[in-house]
Length: 242
Length: 345
Image (cartoon, rainbow over all chains, first blue to last red):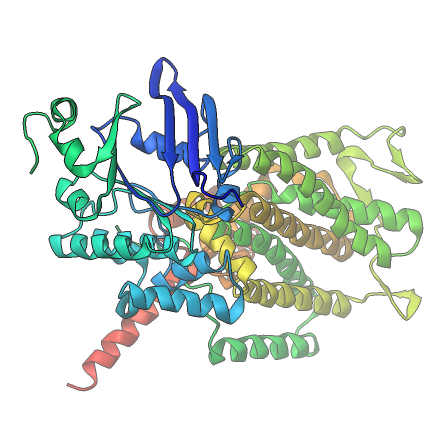
């Protein structure tokens, strides 16, 4: 209904914790269908930014427009219902419940009865979680729990998916699978990925936004960003690209 | 990362055939019991069933919704007092029975709204519920004077309200529920609430509650308004506690400020911890055992019942953290596996 406008936009978005400004007047624009990577050193404000987008933190000032509507002050569940899904940095799952129950709880937000059950089953097949459906999530390895959380996000079929370090703690093979999955999901959803692993970003990235000290430092294609001397200086530092 | 054994993980799995058999056997046993046991035991068992309802209200809220209310006695006492005042005023008992449940639920709705929608942390919720029940106790205790009258009923402060009518039979308002009748009523309601809660946990509402207990933030990000679900659980639990309070008044024909007090509030917690909060049957058994044990200690002339009960509680908190029934269940499960493993050899 909004035509070709951005699906998500922030205007002057800021968050201060006491005297510390974690996010400073960020103007961010995300077009429908994008696959955006967010990078930046620790403490650059990426996770705070994500938390404001999902209503987990209330911005100090500024606006967040989802499909042109301001969602500042909306509760996390309202933003979730409007089609924003997030995978948090640490696996954020129901540890005491089975994989099956975790996926069903996610599916039940949109569907009822048999439909919810089959939607959960379909995502489990897609992510190859079938063999561990009846295991408790708390007993699983870190990488598997990440997959369960990704599955919970996917089963809700969100318009915008925010992934905070989706490949953290994964083996190379798992992280390749994650990259493939992200590209696949991107055919239907707009995605923002926060990652540190440059190899991983190289696999998926089109446009990259660099955060530094709560501001957007530069926004460009992966190759341009990686070649930028300022980015090398503040973020990649002495180590360079792995 | 391991799974926390102190809370139930498998509530969404439908009970197996033997559970239904167990419920049926329990129902039949309770049905025939009054023909075989004497009146004193019937009275003792009735009060255990009634207090087990109070334990169920707390364990449902704590074990499945993750909300630790230290003051379920607030709704227990309000239920009892509502029934007492209304039935004495009205001269009938049927609608006061219902109102005795609904009024405390209304109170829980208001109290719960401010606590849950105010997003106070779990520990404050425990403290506030405890303080509320103590305030109610103090308030009732201070109503000794003749000016504290509701309708024609004096609140009587410390002394409580005597002469609360037992339930009238629906088909004959002159006849009141006998001791058998009270036994049947409390047994049936306890069983009904037990089975009802077990089935509720299979329903989407119950499964969402357990999800919220496990990870409230994740459930909200998925799109659930956790406040709505927690408040609903809080009000439902208040209704069960109020039902217990009304039955208590019917059973003893008496209500007193002790229904609200710290001793009573703490006992509910002890029943649930001893029985085990990861099952619903655990708190029922816990109530029975602790009550029976307490009574028995009382007759042994030791004189330190509270002290001994305190030691029992410490033992459970330190050694059998899951509670009695889950511990036994795990032990039996282990034994079964050993047995099965040994057989083919």
